[in-house]
Length: 209
Image 1: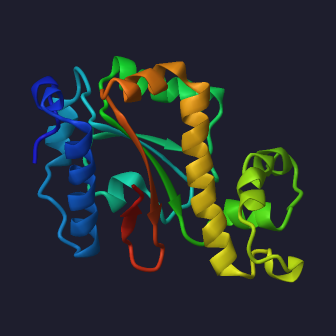
Image 2: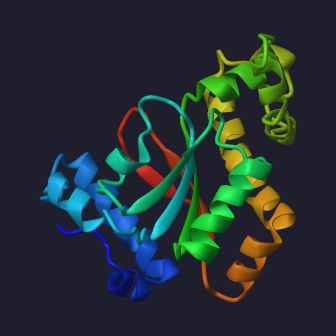
């Protein structure tokens, strides 16, 4: 499989980009990787890159977007931060990826059993991690059940995963609120912004409507 070119990127649509990622994740789950010559892709991308998607994911070592979507060099922009939230720098990176580099899709990819989400659920305090986890607290507060404080912590994995999903949803809202560039591109149909969840037990990615 060859790296994307300016011509193949131009034929890409947001819907087609989602389909590419879904097909890649299916290959990943079935352990049937696409046949790629990575050194050839190094040569093919040496003078330019034409990715079709931008993926914001967690730094979790189990959730490499390139691997779980079976993508090669030059296929996606991968933005990683613990808890997959956005800040000004990440928004700027996404604006570059979409407006200047031509990607058609932004995916906010959360995952089950997320350590950053667990830390936010437990109100963990540790150096700079303390202020970072504050970015995830709105998602903790959004999940109303269970009401029992004894169940609203990292020991309750169902609660943790509900917070992870809420965090994806709130991150998308922040992108649309805080990035005029991306909001206008979405409104014009140039890009789509979607949420998804990676299951660390199965390797499957569920896309949200």
